[in-house]
Image (spheres, rainbow, N blue to C red):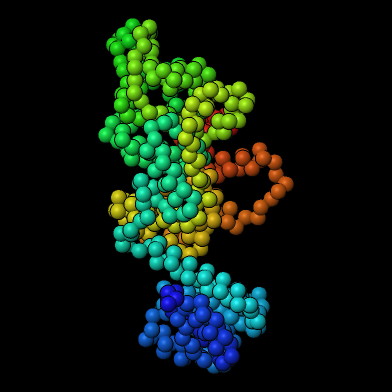
Length: 441
């Protein structure tokens, strides 16, 4: 038997129209009730829980607009589609203004009706999911929220990489969760009980990176008052995660290549090698192969790192996961901030879904935290969203601007979004603070 997709009430004074809509939607798996006028529709609504109302606009005595108003005032968890044989811009605007979710004109094709109904039920599903104060059951694996085909592919690759102790190169845009993926690989491998040591190579000054990674002996340089182990010794028996590997110098790349080939290191100031048993996971948001072609990254190291490769999809390509993540972050941060889980209205939610998220999951997390902190009520509307999102949703695209002009505007919008915090802006943009300062000049 076909699964019941939901309950629909169709209201029209034309018998043929009611019967056609009822028959077609019933064949699609919906339960469909009918009413020939608004009074009959209201009686049905009082006694039956309806998911979607499809109403004609022009009816004798009481119009479809009056029914839309009644539904919006009394049944906020129901969606409304307006159908009319007298389509005008004014009637469409009026219907949407008072609360209709969609508007289609007679005569309409079945596919137009089905699409409108599908959109309405998607919106209803989102409304029930976002804004509820219940603790949701998230589709979570390896500590990663998602159910899209793109993220499921990553889950399968994590399983394979966890079983084989080889170097792994994790690629993806800034904020996609590369360290989370690395942790998942480590903690699902036979090394899970050993240390996992994450290092951001771009955050450590080049002149200090070698001593931080390999350690140093007393007297090796000014200020080396004692012998100190490096991150590789700390990770011995476990995994070291080298984030932003593309930022390392050619000299450091040579030393890393030796670690992979010989499984040994030299502490700064020492001529004696030291054996280490460390699995290396590396990550970058740059095109390493392009860096190899331009001579900025060693080809031999690239192939040593790229034994297993995982490419993490950007958030905009993870269809459906944005809603799950919004859901998760709302339920996570609202209690921490002493607030109720916010309700996000349909228009704001639609903008969040369609935004391209250049900063990916990290940017989404920051935006949700900011919305919860700054909101004066438990409802989030379009006006609460950062200006960059409102502009992207309502502004017209212009293809006459140069790339430099677009970049300039975007950097400004990101800075405004994070309240001028350059560190946060640099993270979202996927660059370091020094590069951001240069761009601001």
